[in-house]
Length: 159
Image (cartoon, rainbow, N blue to C red; front, side, top):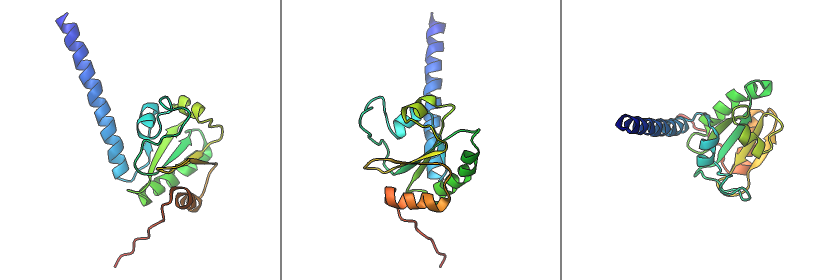
């Protein structure tokens, strides 16, 4: 009995440790200006908990974000990946880029009615998210960032 209890406790602490590691890893990737792949649980924690409020969009984040719904088999999605990485780096500290693999996260894709890949969702801190479908050049994504998210591109110059 004691071995069973201690085994269960060890497994619980291990799972808590892995969860804390995953959360730390997400925050580290965001701080480094990287596009962050999220699962359903992370999506509901950092972006939108659609189980808690399915009728009303309530953004869980503090900075605007972009959600890239993609699949590994999708050619345009593969072409978009380096663009999204560039956007994550360029707008580090201002906009968070999340990636959702629609094959692995079918619940998320179904809830949002994702039928075309890639689908890019621009999420302001306050207001309604807007989606764009298909492969977009970086300049068009930056226009959405400015118009939907209210973030102007800052050009840094060496002095």
